[in-house]
Length: 61
Image (cartoon, rainbow, N blue to C red; front, side):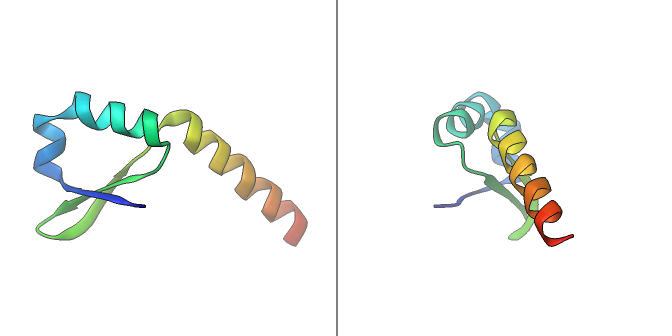
């Protein structure tokens, strides 16, 4: 399930968001004025996602 927080939350609670990203391995969507602005994600989970995308591109291409 996606986690959504305002960008200001990142400024105040980077440690909490870092822990959440590591524990859940899911993206955390950060909003600005109620609109998606950034996505924070665990680096290892992001690397896995990139590998899957590359494999998919090779199959399709």
